Length: 355
Image (cartoon, rainbow, N blue to C red):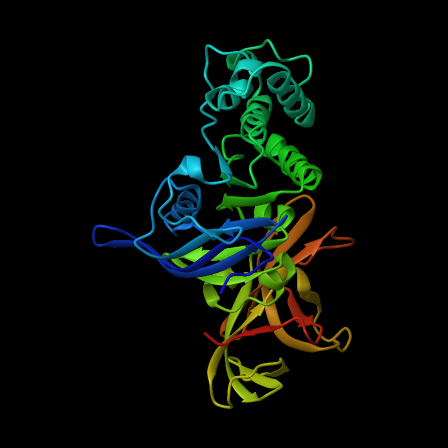
């Protein structure tokens, strides 16, 4: 059934390359005007999914619709989309203006309309005054803006971005993340952004789809994906986490491998083997016996201590479990290897993973 609010709908889409299943029965709806990220490791199928939306690859099975119109077998030029790749593919012999004009000229846009649309695109990506420069006279961030302007000048309904920040250094990549978010709000169209960078996806998108081995494992807001992962893969891939084996004691209680009972909501029946995900920054560490901890806790011994400048990371051996604890802005004397401590966390910090 077609969703009237969806810009892109993917129903049961599978893509095979010979005997290799690159995308496996994916169902996904991306809303009009949404900034959506497809996230996963290399080879997970995210770029193939993007290429099928673009028309660069055709699905082996399933339905693909853009604003309700079936486009699964349509050529790229019959789809209201444009794509920005990691390799910006700018024409080196053309100026900024000529690069941005190229798509419009191919569509036979001429005269005042051509100049007006190109000027708007140049202003949108803040390249005014650089119109006559060639790509080799631009920084990496400026080249990326040209690629964005060249895609947006065609007024697509959906903009597809395949790891467009991957070639930039860390500082510039972070700056461009904010610029892309601001640009998406300005133009108001759907952005589908492919990345393998977890922090990038969390920082930029309204919703994230996490892929692994061709399958879409979970779709949700950054907060939902991070705080309530539904599989071990998602929990471990999105940031850092402590995955602790456990058994369901009751609907609101699980028993950790160490034997400690903690409160944690789960729909799994008693006796089920599950895992508990605990983010390092949600865990407190204090000297053992100094004070009773609120919530749940485990006694342990500090092992490795890693100083990161803005944070200190402790590895605490708690029975059969190694717990990673991250303390931002450490104040006072840090703990040292061999210190006996108690690690604790608030009720609700532990997410139970049933897969």
